[in-house]
Image (tube, rainbow, N blue to C red; front, side):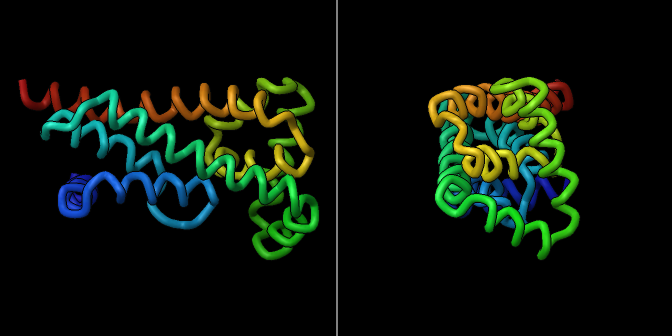
Length: 167
């Protein structure tokens, strides 16, 4: 719980801007604090302090979507040269990128939704979808659903855990 306390202290000190920036940067595939760690801490924050659950959920969804759209457009305009550079520079991305293409071919637009739940794939899906010029509206719909479910489930895990502990 120490890591969560540290995260919560930063948020209490600097405000929700910290959450927004971390989730935005995560979707750009920047190394940092993963949403699988941050989102339960957000749930704890909502349970222990006077933050609105709905407000925090919307904030996290918007931050993640803006990061996803940014990476989508990087893929759209730079495309395959950028993906090839990433694969060369970071060989571990080869498998996640291949998974995205497999899921997209197998499940169509719903593949984006599925990819949002796979670690290592979740943040690269935007780049790949942009590079293959997937329809932006469809991308946003399925990304919103996937990101929304992911963020909600993780927020609830922190929120419910604290409520159970405090009984």
